[in-house]
Image (tube, rainbow, N blue to C red):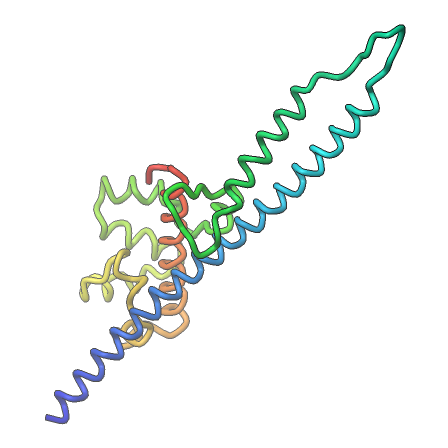
Length: 202
């Protein structure tokens, strides 16, 4: 009976650890989105400054000569206005409101990039399967020696972000590699979600 209680307790702890890992990945994604929204706000402010400068320049270039008024074309100000409106629309997206219309910038994709290129990983998975993808991931970390341990427990690249460090340590993997493998796997999925939300097919 005591062993059964310990088993249930261990199972509950594993479930809790997996939930914490998922929450950690979501928090990191929210931070990436928040940074991108702040960048959009800065772009809106810059566009407004450009618009004001353009209006002032147009006012200064109105020259009256022999009853003829010469002025610069209004097309630049219209273009800037349109950019301001588009940027303001994007700026209305809050950090905690993720919608399908959200399009991360190139800087966002760069910030959320992982050790694995999701596009390259997809090709490896298509041609060689998920086991080869796990070994490729571990080779980038110089952890190839741990591949048999993970494969024996049926832990692949898609399960790794949700595995607890304690579970990996129970397989004989040291604490340092456990932590890095989980973090890099979570970062890979963040990068994957970021690329997909930007319309890139991966």
